[in-house]
Image 1 (cartoon, rainbow, N blue to C red):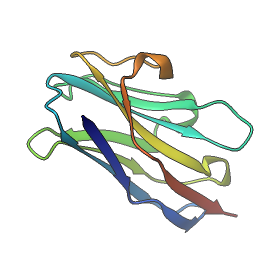
Image 2: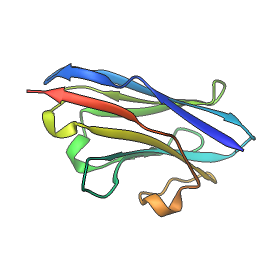
Image 3: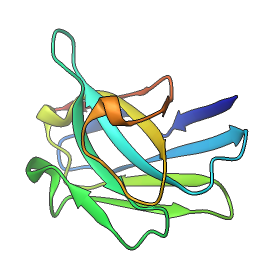
Length: 124
């Protein structure tokens, strides 16, 4: 069994920053790509960012490019999402996800494991 645990969410004013972390534990998943998704009430889960197993390949949804940075530390089994210049429209529950394999994907059904989510609220 694999567990993913997100942390780092909270309430921040517009223009502020947060860093989300996602730690994995349990059964070894190596190699695995990781991603962040977000969801607001009544809407489908939205892809935010993803990173390949070796950390070389990354991708972002257009709305966060230049503001968010994804990274990983495989020695710590942790992936991060640094979020800068936050906007009220970034408010959502953020989920990390893992999929077996080297390369990332950008759709939710292609991920095998999910965390419980962490709330990010950006006030105007």
